[in-house]
Image (cartoon, rainbow, N blue to C red; front, side, top):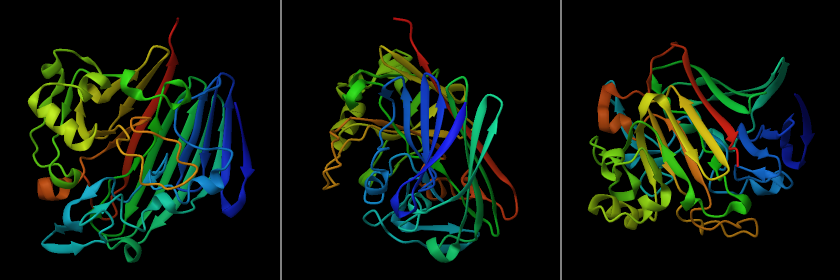
Length: 338
């Protein structure tokens, strides 16, 4: 395995890692994944050739590291230790993905470590309270590791100067089909697939999820069957949002997604996975926007969005001052025997 760096314009560097059957590409812009190819099939949405033009105007956060808080915070406000914090509202009345100064649109410093059987790309930045209006500054490392077993691992290491919220995740969109054909034929599987229901503005309205394994009497459930379900609760959610944009509890910190050719496994120490099936692709008025609804899906490993307002002082996104934060998620791709 080896890595090489290709510099494009506007300060964007592409870090390209070659592992024979698979190749993966990261960039310093948003500490993001740009491409992941198995042979000639790109299993994530992105643009290597024109990354310098593609990403800065893209509103869909393709492959970006999201922080300091992934997902929405209702009414762009929360209370911590009796103090109310007002954030920037950048999603209607709500704050999303850390606000307009979120880290997905900044350039990270980085270094590359080539080791036996793996390559590490260590991205670093500091999140400033003066930029995003959350309490405290955070020193952050985002470590992308790719190994000979075709496994991509993301580690987050952080320390905050004050008690704050921290809910990082990666906004990668997967598609195991060729040519970004819609992902309705993919199946999700876990011993537990509990889906939290959304109310107004895609905000979780209750901490009582619906058990999809029980609802479908199946641990391996096709996206299409969820989209077209006649179960009254599921149907109402799918009609309202055009697909899935929901947090899940999964079983054993592991889930899989598969189509006929590939199997993708996810392992995480985060409490939830947000699955978003790219339900409305029309907001980006660009020649680069070749995407139709359901042309990808995210697996955002994180705390449930808006947890601070749902759970108060028990919210898992609360990070104490000067306490080291660590989280790890791995995605591994397998080619099925045909």
